[in-house]
Length: 163
Image 1 (tube, rainbow, N blue to C red):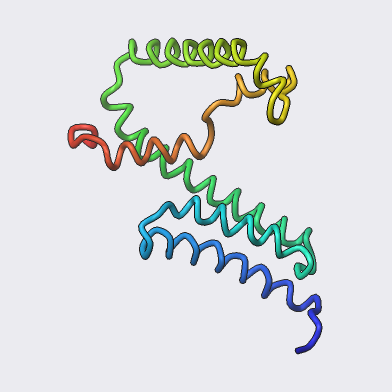
Image 2 (cartoon, rainbow, N blue to C red):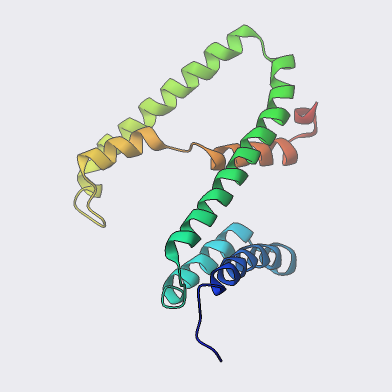
């Protein structure tokens, strides 16, 4: 029962890594529930109980930031290789127009919904500001989550989708 020292920072980083991956694996394979949501729960518990025993918050932040960047880069590269291989063989020029038009329409619909709901979201809950509403209308579903959902649809979608 010795007091924690700076040597233990590596051990703490390994513990958080093992916690994340073990939680995901057990949730998905043993309990059949969402591993992502289980990791969110595990992260909330570590955030709640961990700060008093984490020695170097800055190092922990840097390590997890590097892991996030590396995995995000691998995800986008993987998705680009899978989807890009399929898209460039089957897409005709008019499809690019439809894609752009769909994007513009979705941005307009999202902005319209936020405009209609702004009186409610500005008064209740977290009380959204105008700048936050503009950010939400621009933000939407982007990045690695959208790419992961596209890969899931590609993998689990209709059989003719994979051709």
